[in-house]
Length: 69
Image 1: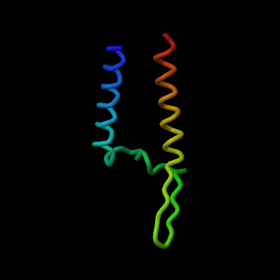
Image 2: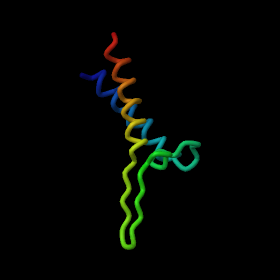
Image 3: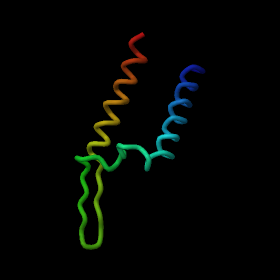
Protein backbone atom coordinates (compact mmCIF):
# COMPACT_ATOMS: atom_id res chain seq x y z
CA UNK A 1 0.00 0.00 0.00
CA UNK A 2 2.79 2.40 0.90
CA UNK A 3 4.68 1.69 -2.30
CA UNK A 4 1.58 2.40 -4.39
CA UNK A 5 1.02 5.72 -2.60
CA UNK A 6 4.62 6.76 -3.27
CA UNK A 7 4.29 5.89 -6.97
CA UNK A 8 0.98 7.76 -7.25
CA UNK A 9 2.58 10.77 -5.54
CA UNK A 10 5.51 10.77 -7.94
CA UNK A 11 3.16 10.54 -10.92
CA UNK A 12 1.17 13.51 -9.59
CA UNK A 13 4.36 15.54 -9.12
CA UNK A 14 5.46 14.73 -12.69
CA UNK A 15 2.01 15.70 -14.00
CA UNK A 16 2.25 18.98 -12.09
CA UNK A 17 5.58 19.79 -13.71
CA UNK A 18 4.14 19.00 -17.14
CA UNK A 19 1.23 21.36 -16.50
CA UNK A 20 3.61 24.11 -15.33
CA UNK A 21 5.80 23.70 -18.41
CA UNK A 22 2.88 23.09 -20.77
CA UNK A 23 3.38 26.22 -22.86
CA UNK A 24 7.05 25.43 -23.44
CA UNK A 25 6.56 21.83 -24.55
CA UNK A 26 6.60 21.06 -28.30
CA UNK A 27 3.40 18.98 -27.96
CA UNK A 28 0.56 20.75 -26.20
CA UNK A 29 -1.87 18.31 -24.65
CA UNK A 30 -5.41 19.43 -25.34
CA UNK A 31 -4.48 21.06 -28.64
CA UNK A 32 -3.41 18.07 -30.70
CA UNK A 33 -4.52 17.42 -34.27
CA UNK A 34 -7.70 15.38 -33.99
CA UNK A 35 -9.13 17.30 -31.04
CA UNK A 36 -12.64 18.46 -31.89
CA UNK A 37 -13.47 22.17 -31.65
CA UNK A 38 -16.83 23.49 -32.83
CA UNK A 39 -17.30 27.25 -32.53
CA UNK A 40 -20.84 28.54 -32.70
CA UNK A 41 -22.19 32.06 -32.59
CA UNK A 42 -22.53 32.17 -28.81
CA UNK A 43 -20.74 29.05 -27.63
CA UNK A 44 -17.79 26.75 -28.18
CA UNK A 45 -17.76 22.96 -27.89
CA UNK A 46 -14.39 21.38 -27.26
CA UNK A 47 -13.63 17.66 -26.97
CA UNK A 48 -9.95 16.61 -26.78
CA UNK A 49 -10.35 13.29 -28.63
CA UNK A 50 -6.70 12.70 -29.60
CA UNK A 51 -5.51 13.85 -26.19
CA UNK A 52 -7.79 11.26 -24.56
CA UNK A 53 -6.52 8.52 -26.87
CA UNK A 54 -2.88 9.46 -26.21
CA UNK A 55 -3.35 9.56 -22.43
CA UNK A 56 -5.22 6.24 -22.53
CA UNK A 57 -2.36 4.58 -24.41
CA UNK A 58 0.20 6.06 -22.03
CA UNK A 59 -1.70 4.95 -18.91
CA UNK A 60 -2.26 1.49 -20.40
CA UNK A 61 1.47 1.16 -21.05
CA UNK A 62 2.35 2.25 -17.51
CA UNK A 63 -0.24 -0.14 -16.07
CA UNK A 64 1.09 -3.00 -18.20
CA UNK A 65 4.66 -2.30 -17.07
CA UNK A 66 3.75 -2.29 -13.37
CA UNK A 67 1.54 -5.40 -13.54
CA UNK A 68 4.04 -7.38 -15.59
CA UNK A 69 6.08 -8.27 -12.52
